[in-house]
Length: 295
Image 1: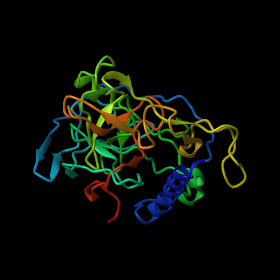
Image 2 (image 1 turned 30 degrees about the vertical axis):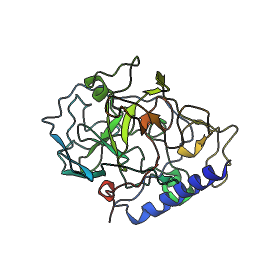
Image 3 (image 1 turned 45 degrees about the horizontal axis):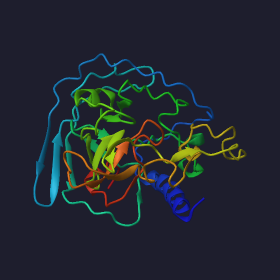
Image 4 (image 1 turned 90 degrees about the vertical axis):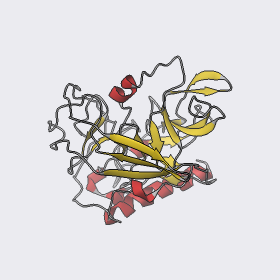
């Protein structure tokens, strides 16, 4: 393990422990250790009127929305998710001219990673832990299938307060934006630090390129004992390790790209088919408006 990855992993573990202070509920007890196929709920329901507005000043972009997506969603409540979608007061701010910090900032539980153009947030972390204990150091991968979360075909579900949010690739949104693997991804949204979010394809050195994750499953078995046992199979976020250069993207699922919105080029984040799908750290400084835990 590289020094950078070790620091990132330690920071992620600490962020899970810090989540105790922001949690508004008890964590559910789980002892599942194997991945299962995702049973996604068909997106056949019209969620109602969606409103989203992005305004720009010299220093910031401001996103105002009601949190209702502009595409079909699954039926909520459902067997894996007992909550109903309701309108939200989405008011977020991102830097208009983001700068890399030189060191990464791990995404913490209680923070949204970013916001889509339709005003629905990207919130990839799940408040689900081994034995219901954030101190265990083992957090469940929302897309691993071990825990039934009632995700719909947009890889999204609903929090107790009615917030619909994406845990993975927002299928309905990218279809509306006319995504094609043969060209640069359309702009999907913005991360909390201001850098743009795209999906799966970018332009690198003048060529359309599939943007691929640099994470892979660890080899062998988990430690067992007070920790989960079984193979590293993707049940937990900690089953994965970042390997520099393995894919086209860095540890934050980011890379330099040129796009119609940024013809001179920019650092950008990409959603990927493989883990982590939605990035788990920031290259820049996330704005505090993206924090939804206790302040």
